[in-house]
Image (cartoon, rainbow, N blue to C red; front, side, top):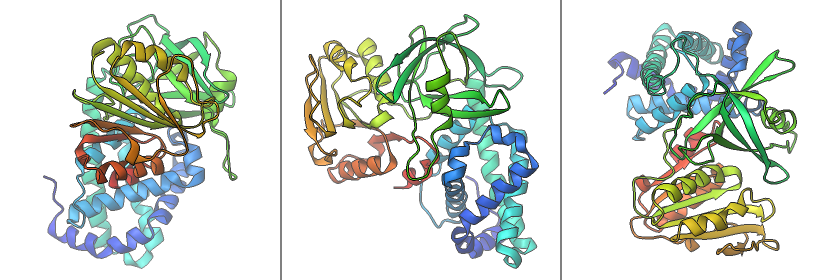
Length: 408
């Protein structure tokens, strides 16, 4: 068990409210300082999330939550959160040598924002908090790299060739990928994701995004299903998703990480409930493909929400999966259900948003959720009220809002 020293615990507890109140100002200053000193790190961080402030908010929440954990303010289980952060870091190729850089600029930002309140004793206490967290993450990430058989040079990246492209909807496309060197295709657990690194501006800039593996584990290729992010309310279009949709063709090469992600979409047996919204369907599709090949008699319920039937990516695959999974029930919710019918699909189709009270629940069901954070929070809350234990509800969050979702 990790414990702060007595003097540090007192200093952190006394200054925690101030750090919490100014957390996003601290992390905003931190990123500015770090990128000015180390512009090469811009290639790792999602610049879209930087622009919207989501990354700054997520980091502030993580630091504060860990300090609350160490000082006993919060009883939130910390192990699952550490695992989630470690998997995200490993998928980006974060190294132990980068932690001193982060620590130096983060603690300097605390001093700049809080000013005279940061005495030498307070600075030392928060330095202790940071390094307790950093050492935990470094150890977990080292283990993940070993399991993933990362190359001796420490690089997580491998070249993959686009073998096929499929247009699923106007804004969603699937990419089937095979190793460019002709080597074996690693397997994965449904619910895991890979990082995709693309070169922009003629190779002058790199950006990385994570995409769930949406095909069958054990196949001779990997599949990712990518939604093109169109900017709304002043936010920019998604840089990487737009690049993939507009610039990447069959036989082009992409750099991918090994599969990471601590959440399994199939659980450990028994009835399974998959609940998704929008592009959150990707881990559910991998789970259905996996079960069709390995446990075809398992009871499974799929509940999916989308704006329209025409916008529901890979919907045409459901009749085939129902034939292979005789105990699969499908419930679809569309904001506009006018075009909800599909030949051969046996499904309940309703208009509106998912009502957790109407989701079928088998005794002892295991649940996997994936979609926007507000959607998952609403569904999870409804399932908890209906008696589903929290430990039987797993969920995957796209983007940096993972800690807030975990704490709900």
